[in-house]
Length: 341
Ligand SMILES: *Cc1c(COP(=O)(O)O)cnc(C)c1O
Image 1 (tube, rainbow, N blue to C red):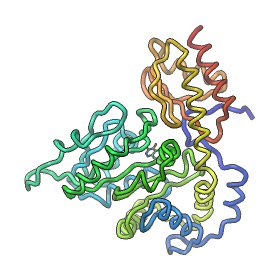
Image 2: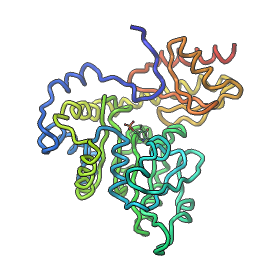
Image 3: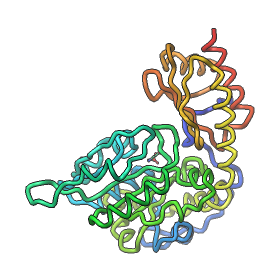
Image 4: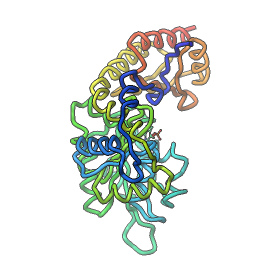
């Protein structure tokens, strides 16, 4: 089988042999009855890591986010989020379709809103206006290049939002990347949020699954909404075992992905055609001056390298568990060769 260098996303990681063993050996039960010991262990571990009362295993990050939106809002409410956020752009308008809420998107440079931008968008508490009830932040920011939310900005938003009676949800799909890069715990980075979603199936390398963490009351409601969406799974311990394994063995190694991303960035900076956005974690976004993004995507594919076009001239590369230092150097070499031809 041909070996691809797959830089499209960190979702492409495959379970390692040791992770597969942990999955094969998992004790299981019926999780809809709350009887799967491995799911329960994963939920307890996640709650503990984030310093929360409870956690819930969900099939995908999108389901985790959408459950949080449903629990925190009523139909007709408004939700403030960033213009390029995953919830607004890559979840099929489900916030409208399922929760019946209206997005108020905020433009930013790197994906991080400040309280000063949010405050004027909050609807006055007047009966003939729809009501703002929720703010969603994203850390790290996916489509704007994997940047880390400035902690003080997030904390200010949480404090001010709570004074106004608003809830704040974190789409923390890659919060562990932010934690490793800043050498802070996920608990410290997510303190005060009313709910947090994070993905096991991205850089952490599990095949399936995400988690929601929050108060016991929030998680109880979330479990109901998960069931509404058909996300009540039975012997899900086989999947949860991969998540537990990932939290145990694959967090610290995210550092390697960040180092590989830096190495790749260094090489790409030498190519005049490319303007690179700052690289903070495992995501690299660059703009091509003349070449259409699709042309580069195709030329790389012929060389066994997969990358993702996220705009007419924009490319995203993501480093992960299944990409080595030498893969990254090969990719950089191929990009240079194609663009300088
Ligand atoms: C991947 C991702 C999600 C959704 O995860 P899925 O498991 O693919 O549904 C949500 N938010 C962000 C920022 C992501 O990168």
